[in-house]
Length: 305
Image 1 (cartoon, rainbow, N blue to C red):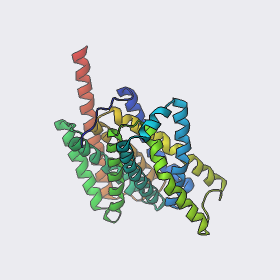
Image 2: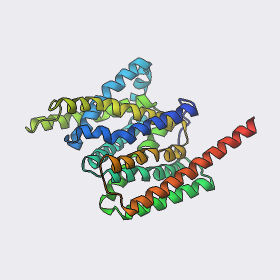
Image 3: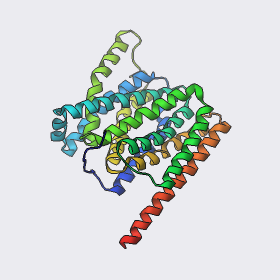
Image 4: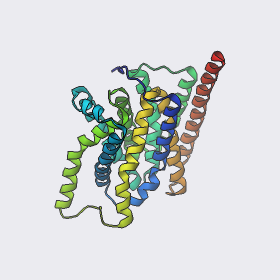
């Protein structure tokens, strides 16, 4: 698989800001999910998908991307790719929400620590991106840390791998598909809509009823799920199309670090020695990778000065 020639939609600086903002929202998302802790994971994924679509359509109208949306809907290759990305992101949402609701915050955090390694390897293999020696050392250091943590969390390792692989493939396909960030998310939501409506209809028909309307705060959180979903995904897709996938991958370490801190402070999970060793190795890897990026950007500025 090779990436088609897609022109970046934004500058490198704005792309970096978009990436950091998306990761900030995702890193703090466990706090939001406290509000819907009693909503079944599948049902919440259904509601957030349902409420994401109208928000996307409003943005499409306000930004004048209707023609792009109609063009993408008429392209078979684009639709097939977005069918795959819709499946991957739905699987990722389901796994993440299940992990948080079942007090597996560290497992979710591990998944998103594994994700950068997956993303960088995908970038090297499929997009022919290259890493410097320092960056390869950073990847190796992070891999050692993740391996140590994985050995101490074998019972929930499947959750971590599900989150990492599903989102890694989602990001790769979104980077290569000939559809903009907003339009791509809109079509993904359209693709999932029939399944969402069928599931919510079945839940209501089965007699148990849905969580929507059960409590005011819970209902407000369900309604807000569309915005919380749409904004970071659009920002991520913008950044992914404008930055090397290896760089996007390493920036990803910021989100699970916030999740890790929340697991310690808010959710009160026990910090085991293997977890401490893992996170220490990963933070050292982040420092090494960031230093290498800074060194290269400084060298470029010196040469062009």
